[in-house]
Length: 313
Image 1: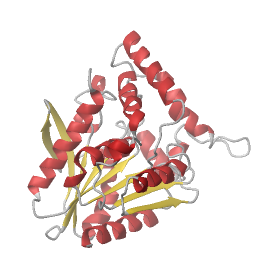
Image 2: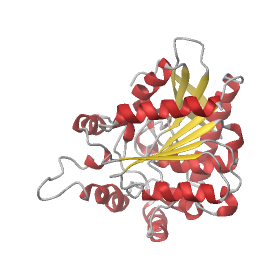
Image 3: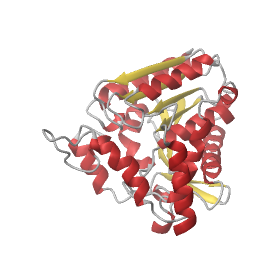
Image 4: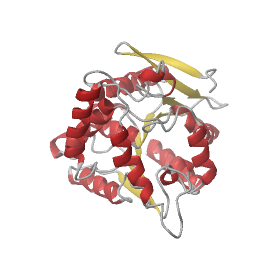
């Protein structure tokens, strides 16, 4: 991975890697990308190039325990010994503040995918007033009915084997389970990551990337599942600015979003507390990574058009 266009931002004692893509003309707006679990910000280069063509400045941080932010293999898939979710959220906030200060006269928007979308959900509650718009990709109003059980299991596993212990159990209960929907007698799965995309070449690129597909620690899973306890608490959601434009997108075959049903429910929860600028689009047959699926050109064009509308009204 090239580090030529990487910035470093200090956040609560950590150094956060931030990938940078600049337009050839003076930028008219800024988008910050918050990536998903077991991937990294550099994977959004194609998406960033499309935004650059429209005059957008694009940044993508590598979360704690991911990409270049993870100093070594032992740090990969791990937020922190304690308060990991709060630390990850603080890192996202530090990068948002850094980007806003760099471009004080430009609107700042946030794009969160999967785990990054759950961080972004929390960010909208805590710091939504600093954003001009937000997009939540492959997101949901819930982490599933078994979330409390999973949370307890991950806490116990971390206590028993250590906070850095890569959780094979979490991998089986999530990613492996997600892939079963794409492993049928008449159409067997080609890889363990078919659930990510219908485009085999994109799946292969993910598998070949040494900074993707790793097992995350039981502690990180406990942090994530713990954060899922109050995603739709009305008192929290009421703190999101009512007029903030929010776009929710998901694939109709994405297991993380409940095949889009969890995404639709989240939109309903936002509207229930008075949010007035909520839009949803579910892409037929698309899987988890819309920007790497066979519908990526359509999804990218939709996002760009929506962003342009969001910052112009």
